[in-house]
Image (cartoon, rainbow over all chains, first blue to last red; front, side, top):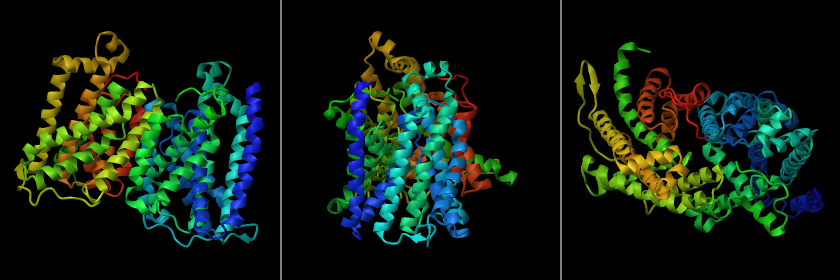
Length: 323
Length: 295
């Protein structure tokens, strides 16, 4: 365990430094396009963070994560628009709706491997159809408009600096919350299941329940991300909650490395950068994106985090079995 | 729901079902041999549809003559992707998720290539200007398209069944499907056999795409029909090749009846819901009896 301790000694100051740097971006890039870009990176990173918990920590290969992003967005927006709730209670509404989705997904959890991948893909595809067609609730492809700015304790977040700070704070809280959870008994149980499912079961871990809890926890960050997305853009359209979004999210997790929590955000940064920035080759940017993922899967199936870990020479301390 | 229209819907549905069947066979064959859920597979339908556009509109071939070149061209693409994009991951014993994502990525690459203005562009392409008028059997209108699609699927499925049972290469394929390790100990060249599986599934997907182009339209969005065929493979028991044919026909009829009599708006949601229901109720599929050990 000495190596684990050493890793923590590096990890916590590093995390804190990155966080400070991210907060420092707000005054420096106030009002610029870059900050709006970073808002989207963090929102997508949040959705990917929940997925990372399912895939990396609990081995639940969910190919329909965008559905929870959408459920959160629509649940939250409904509370914002129809009940005139502020952002924090709207988060609650979003979480409730996303959890309802998790409960619908629960019976699928007894499927394993390809079968769960397929079922979760169908789950995402089905909800995407529902989002697109249930116009009275979701606005369908045209979307819901005029969603109010975030408002917490009487403060309204109007400028992109304020929204960025809000999104960053929510991201940091979710990140820290998950980090703490993984150190609790719950996290240790997940770790035990990764090492040996039968062994964990023999020691009294209820694996089925654990997998469901992991999914239920993993839908919370995307639900929050959905509300933040809606409030940051003041519009939600069903088209952003499709299978391609689910694929994009799992790609972010894989780019970052399934075992890595910060990798979810690093993956979101890279994916969003490719989607937004290369103006000169706009026509080829998704071709580039596809080719890049394909290449990454061939060259570096462990994601960037594995590269970082290899370079740091600290690999192998917390080995995770293949999915 | 008017009962009198039901036979009509069933007949229409069979044409679509033949297409689903062809795609579903590919899904199941790939899963049987490689243990892989391939998301590039639906895009071979897309590729077949635009290749069909080239064959029928640009080169002015008749439909029956277009099937072979379109199928072969798609099969070549399928093998190329398998060898370049998936084989290296397979060789390293890469994680399942890496394989699945690689297929997703190749699917994106294919769609984006076809989308380019110098390729086929983003809009739907029409493969024909007119259709022969339908004929009637017992008061039910039958379109020639339906007959053609069913005949094509029937011939190809029968040929595949014969190939899998009677030829050495076909038996090798089945052996790899049972256990690639044992097969390789028996002297079967596993990689070559997997390439063959990729070729066959690509061929069938391409021909299905040609039919999609002919029945509906060609273009980058036809891959969605391929994705829905996943439901057919699941109904037939994922990995069960004969089951995929039955599953395809059932799905085609189901899809069409739902669209006509229940709700055209919700048909896709219902089809995806069906995948979930079948997987929960009977993982081994509604058709076959066998529960597969893979996965």
